[in-house]
Length: 241
Image (cartoon, rainbow, N blue to C red; front, side, top):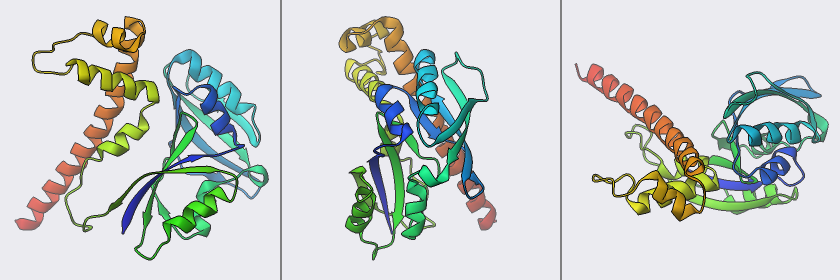
């Protein structure tokens, strides 16, 4: 089985329009889709600069086929949870397309910089080219990010650095790269946030905000990985007793 990561520009959909206008905002699905035949509901997480987050939500809520996009946590924060209701007949659902194709995929897509990021799990006889053609046949644009052979199911889990980086906005990745290049994370810490800001051409506060959000996402994913890894080790030890 292969793990395949795709970037999809969901052309004509409100997520893409809002994400292109606010490229430093990240939208992440945090619940499954529920609802009846004509309406579906889900909860999403929108994160970024508080003003951009508010603008993103307003733009997204105004687009077809969104019926409502109501914040369920306060605006003015860097992360806001939003309850979304979608009109199904007018919605081009990528998840339903994957279901029609009989594909396995990772839940919780991430949208940033105008692209949705999807991870698929393909059998060896699945035709990746045909999958991409089916997505593009709906007017979308697709980029192949990576394609890896998966290890055996009982193999120890790996921390997928590439997957973490895809969750970062372009500015967060740029800030993290600049900080690493300047030695901000080195043992001697040869650089400060002022050096990162100078490299990016932004204020110290802006550089710190980009780094703080990038670090938060990376460390959150690393924490989840270490937790899973610890659980697996405990299970192995129990089986060996």
